Length: 352
Image (cartoon, rainbow, N blue to C red):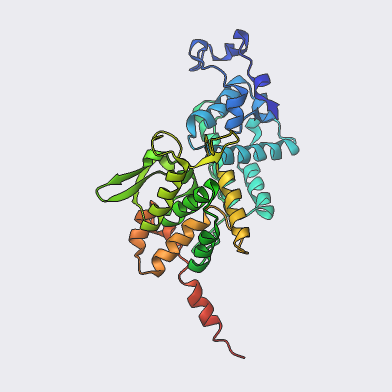
């Protein structure tokens, strides 16, 4: 890997390759700072890309900074293409034009021996999309990953661990609500359970995203793909949120983040910074341990738990899909674990 700032210097003579092409010097955007590149997982570019010249290096960076908007996708795709180019370097493939479908297929085959099929499919998708971008930018003539097929992977049941209704209630009741940390944690877990929200949407909530409409309160969730999704608030979640906002004293800070980190400043229990996904994950694992839950749960557990509890209580798959903001009912069905108990009961009929 070569540091990006060593690959593309901003001096005029380093940009002469663009003078006769679509990237004329006067239209060149400023080189992203190291901090911006690091945030996108691009503090370095692969040596194989660097050897292809300035046009390839710029096109590589633009793929992540201009073409991919979701930060989680950026990080995942940056890891995937980084692993692919390092794999090529280890096999003495030092020219990007030497990469052909056979080489990409060999990479996919070998990754399948050590990685899960969904991971391999994602890596192949990242490589394929990057080369499509390089073809359009006239860096390479063809896409060597276009004809390569990924491993088959059919999923009818998700792997996300799910808690029972009793375990979820025990977890919520075990949280000490005499502290600001406790009421915050209970409210965040409540949002995940009662609104089927993704953790990314929950931690980006603003105070005014919890609003009254008529006699009921609602949550305005900003889901992935830029979708704005409004969900009515369950009466229990309403109690949790009111207790948290009242204790935190943030009702008037409408533009501020709803779920915040704790502050070290005296007299101010909460900071002005929103919680991050790692913050939420550590909190959930800590709360589960304190409640005596053995299952290794994560943030997504409560989305699956809420959907399963809803369906067990007579809810329909169509409405569960609507609440969860899924594009397809097949996705919602992956979270449905209502048949687990039926299967266990049938297995126990094997009496020998």
